[in-house]
Image 1: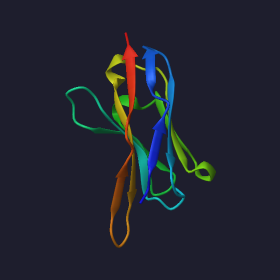
Image 2: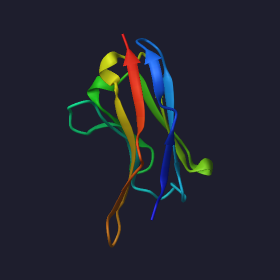
Image 3: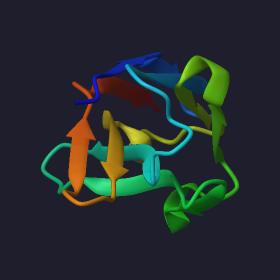
Image 4: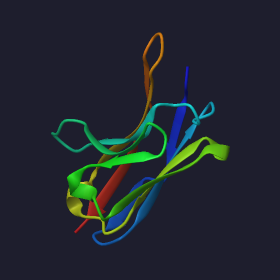
Length: 118
């Protein structure tokens, strides 16, 4: 089991910045995939940014150049720095972990609301 606790959401103006944090209850050093998804009003959940296979990163086209994912293995934490926020970034942001093994496992955080005003 992996518990994920997100923090850092809130209200920002367009063009502003927020940083999200996701703290895991165990070491993230060997986790296969860890990152962020979001679900906007009336939309399906979508990938925002993830680490795969260690340090490889994958970003949604809509956030490239504006958002940066980073990790601190010592703190078992992944961050999402969001700059140049747009109203369309408004969503609930979820931390996600996938562990590939004999039995694949997937865990989600509780979500944190990000609201961007124009």
